[in-house]
Length: 211
Length: 118
Image (cartoon, rainbow over all chains, first blue to last red; front, side, top):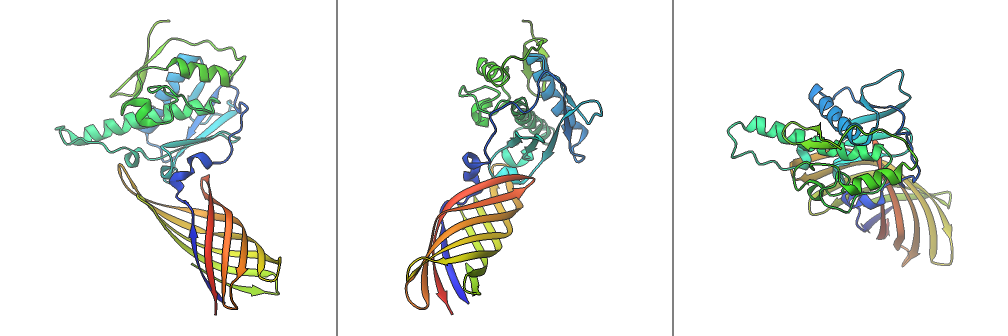
């Protein structure tokens, strides 16, 4: 019998981000075909609506065909779920290999929300959490749509750092870099964007501007 | 901390318990391991180890304190040097540890330790 004392190097999962499983470089899903986003059963109607709003933004801006909910007629399905474990190193993570899945940290852990100056504190908290969930989902859907890298430009939907991406709030529109990343990741696809999507705070959704 | 025993000369069995604390994260990890120990020279051994266990993490996040768990699988190639009949040094340049809870996370870390036989 023996007793050992070991010292390990940096084993903190927070340091995992760069060491996660290798990301495949090829497109996994066909963005010209419908993709069903299937949230777990513990998702509330409000959470599903926010997911639908994030999907709508991509559909408007890029002409993709993201839908929410399981469907017998859609071959490409992506499971979307909350995960406490993913909180240790990211607000959200998309597994890019089949079966593609999205794991989201429950947003109340990730973002410190100060609603102390508001009269309706509960409403403030709810709205802020919805905004944050929307922002995280909007970003992760970019990975679902085959974008493997992140944007350098602050304020881009696909910026890796949330604070950089949004300055604490949701980006107002898709950046040129978001467009470049999408096109590079989906070469040769023919899509019909509907409009420029303007992202609206406080009730997370996208409105149509003109082209 | 590790306790272990050598069977049939080359088979090394062990139980490990690790506490890993950082600025905002505390990790508790327990695992059982089995390995193949190959003598290299008079005082050197090379050990191929697999560990399987569970980990629990406490994280101080901006929005509050989070507790979460994960399954742990480690693959370690470790060099051991026999200092005396009772003491030995362990060194692994890279221990690969995978954490699983709906998704995988990987940690690569070096490991240095001392063992007391009793």
